[in-house]
Length: 246
Image 1 (spheres, one colour):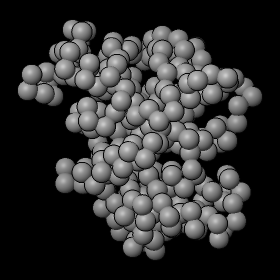
Image 2: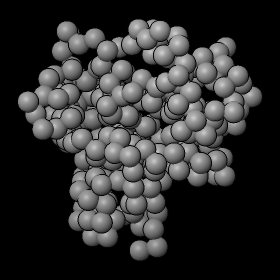
Image 3: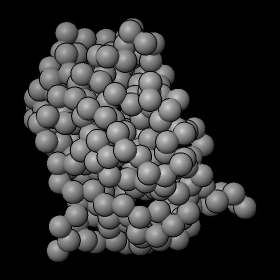
Image 4: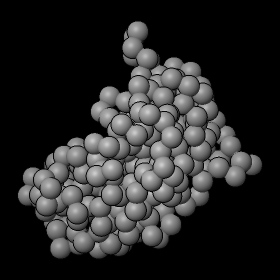
């Protein structure tokens, strides 16, 4: 069995003639917090969507604990129960309360009874500071509150890996901190996370692995201190100069 939780091997993805990902390779180990950084259009979100099987790779392979999940025999729902995802636009069910949003997955996918699902949902809503809002509908919440509910909903599935696709990009600046605080707490607790983000401080301070992408390829990856303090690739250097005072 592989020591890596997720392995991405020679992954490519095209939409028509447009090649978005080109021969991408990287690994994620248990407890890693991997931040994927890069300019808009560099392929970061497409990579995450391939890992979550929301997009089918054109070529290459993705392994979960050494087993390929890109073949025809993979059940996407079962896989996504172990590899969850939080989206920048929250994707909550607007006709359900906060509590119902967090109970639906465990009941329908994990086949938990409602009492157990409710208990699990309440535990994670409390964890993200949203327990007082269990009867609210998404339209009654701020963006930051919606994203915290979306995180609780993903956690209620008790996934092994959680993917975040620019979880703060749709938020007002004052709401960014409350979401990053929850993510920082999850990282400290050892949850394996892959985070596509423009929050360079989070990538530098919370991650243990940073991947810089440009034009559909990984230009450079390594420890945060290597990428931020001593980048080697000219594209990485140019990109980081826009975000730092270097």
